[in-house]
Image 1 (cartoon, rainbow, N blue to C red):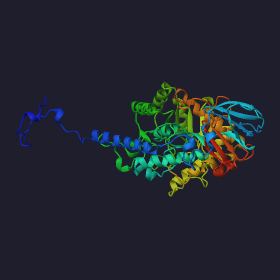
Image 2 (spheres, rainbow, N blue to C red; image 1 turned 60 degrees about the vertical axis):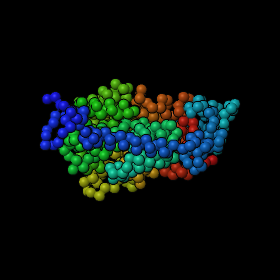
Image 3 (cartoon, rainbow, N blue to C red; image 1 turned 135 degrees about the horizontal axis):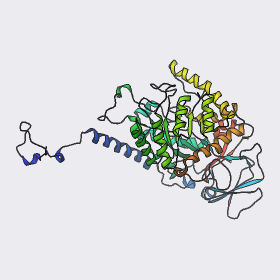
Image 4 (cartoon, helix red, strand yellow; image 1 turned 90 degrees about the horizontal axis):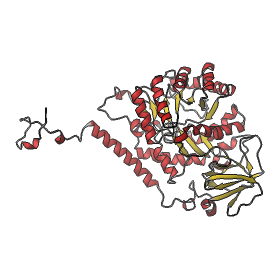
Amino acid sequence: MRLKSARANSRFTPCHPVELDVHDLCTCSSPDIQDFHARMMLDLSRRDVYSGLKPKATQLSEVRPGSASGQGTNAESSANTLLLKNLRLFNGSLVLDDSVCILIKDGVIDSLLPANTDVEGAVVIDCGRRVVMPGLIDAHWHTTLAGITQLDAMSADPGYIHLIAAREAESTLMRGFTTVRDPGGPSFALKRAIDEGVIAGPRIYPSGAMISQTSGHGDFRMRSEIPRSSLRPLSVTEQLGAAAIADGDAEVLRRAREQLMLGASQLKLMAGGGVASAYDHLDSTQFLESELRMAVEAAADWGTYVMVHAYTPRSIQRAIRAGVKSIEHGQLADEETVRMMADNDIWWSLQPFLQDEDANVYPDPVRRERQRVVAEGTARAYEFAQRFNIKTAWGTDVLFNPQKTSTQGRQLAKLTRFYAAHDVVNMATKMNGELLGLSGARNPYPGKIGRIEAGALADLLVVEGDPTVSLGFLETPDATISMIMKGGKIFKKSF
């Protein structure tokens, strides 16, 4: 039936039905318009946060004293060419090298030169015989969600969440972590602010929202929000960009492409249950193989890869068959599954979940029991990884736990329970850098990271310690990391 305009009838009243023109209907209160308004206000809130954070002066030499920038002299902070001398170089081996100096030009390591070399025009930094090592990389660090509680993530203003994330990013860098891979969360704005010099923080390889099936490990909805309705706005975590719920091949493909459009350097899917989950069980397998393959194909079309959260043999094997490249966690893998990982050149991104003083504390016995099972599997997983020569990465996976973010270095140091100290550092630098390089064409920071060699990005630490002997110095970064450099810029210098 063709609708006619109500304005054609000036005597229109509710008692006299009139055919309305669709263009005259008010849609201000429709679910679609309300959803659009909520999303626009959320975006404006994010923009306001970061525009308000930008300082009047962004040069390192002009940043306020005591901040994460401007710790070097004016000459060091503004120089395009730096020469680090009088140092002992850790570059992966058991022997420190005191025969070289490091020449840095425009944020990149130009060359390693003989120790007594002078370079005209270079600003010299005398390291006082301290050890120089690559900046650390955390391959599983939730930049936006680590420093807040789950309650805040579900209820606080987005502006507050992002301000806390900005503060935590600076603290992360001050612990010596110059690069992180974010496995899920709204980190795109934070990454941009760091890259533009608005705030201090590590390089971020963002995954965007963690993609989850309904009832999966990334489904944070309350029971009262079930069943889902097209008339109801997205859940809080979906609006924030922390999670994206998808069911069926087409929906997974759409959500994967959305994160790539936003700037994801790799994708993260939830392929199994977790310890902390209120509803999904640790032993559950999530997403059909065809659904996982949709995300893998979308990522491959963009030149990058998919990582999955998974613990059990069934979920890991399904993910491998779908083409996933990195398994996050996996502490319950059996020998058959680990052999499959080795045969398919799969990365194993492990975390030291040991149910110790750094672990999350759960009030209920169900989650404490899951935690115990995973902790037992952690030691077995590291043994499997070494026996089958699996490419192994390291990360912390601190999530919704602001009290534990400061333990980042300590959680790396505790891996000396399973590996020699120098191998642990290699894992958190060279190996993690290789894993992040899988993002290929979507790599936001082209260039080598985690290494000190010609052509690598100049991400360096000067430390009061010897990584060939012990990693205790990582537990007290304020006192024992004397200089932090990212991209040739000095963010801390205490000598």
